Length: 348
Length: 256
Image (cartoon, rainbow over all chains, first blue to last red; front, side, top):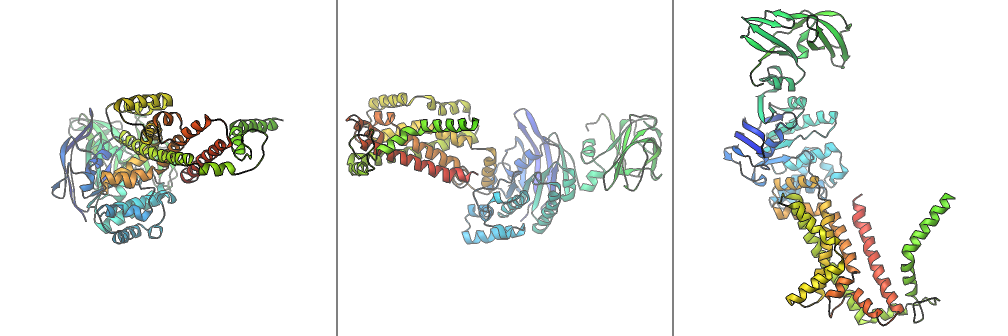
């Protein structure tokens, strides 16, 4: 069971606070979409509007081709998986999972069969008679998933489902969610503030900030070629170089640079730490002194300060095999095509 | 030294609390006609006497009826009041809450007098029902306060989930909210029962022909002390203890 989702000119106010600002988004049937943003960006509000818990001030929600803007949660082909799981503590797992079918009037034998099937899907078939308090956080998470899927929704809405789990369990659950989603083909909309989680599971990422959509795209595109400066910074660490362009001459804190072809004005040149090279490959940027080095296992994080402008700090992720001495001056290169440029004076 | 003093203090404190009850129970087994030392017995003859006394047994039955009936009503009303105030944004909800709890501070005598005046002016005859109404008045604030205090946000999300899965409002309340709050509801219920069970003033003012046990005890007291009163008191005490133990072993244990 799956359906597409259309969000058309959606805005929502909480009193005088504009929580959602003219949201337009198309989600295809069977897609796994992550709504990503810092807390307070409106992602959870958007999910609540999709689930039917909040009636938007203006705008329209369509599921499939039907207008669902003012339809109550129970009547929508959506199910929400809540952040705190919201399991019924007084019911066994089997009763929890079969609650939806029970409300739909399915006889008990049939709905228990259905519940066992869903519990099996999440690997808890043997625990049907347990109560939620006997389970670990990760297991409760699975029960909540099984319960949401038992009503066979066309769209599953997940509100920070992995927020309460430790890192290792979170990675494992990400894989599992992804597997279950591709197995069922149901449309998943997943709210998170963790950009790694978003990149790991989503077909498409929707980056939100201050009630607006900043960027929409596949993870690699959003990471490598972010549409806005906010997205660039939110998706991961970013080096910023302020620059000014006059008469097609590009002036940076490293001096004149000639490999860029940009219109006149001022802006920020950005590139990821892993694009910085000290082995002479790529575009030459300038010279910088190594300030400190931190070992992170899979990479070494190095901080450089420009020799001409010591306030200009660059961060690099270098292979962990490099042994570097602080205080040394390096020639800094940046990989081809690794630059993004964001002009100033434009809303970024 | 200090340890001895602690134990001594503990013994004094408990003695102070339980000596009257102990004396009452002890002299209910008195052989003679007066519940005063010296103790001669033990004998169950006074228990036999009260259990064969129609007035006492019917008063006992009336008390149970009033206690259970008024508690059911008080807890039901308290639950719905708590549900409404915890789940919906109402204008002046703080004021409504205060108004609901305020009767706790009013003395039983005033509550009883007020009801008596209202009932005589409206021409409603005094009966066990009017006494039950009085007990609902005193128990509702307590039931409301206990249930309201246990309605947390975690329950609210479970209710939202139930609605999302297709439950209507009645199903949400019956299948999700009430069972989740069952410890608080049971605590409020048993507390209401014990309070109604040995309440005297309101029952005295608001009953006429059918009376509850405390009122019966009071009327027997007018003809002087007798070990049969001790026996009745012991039965009342025994039932209160039984309710308390039931509360302890069912509700409070489950919460752990």
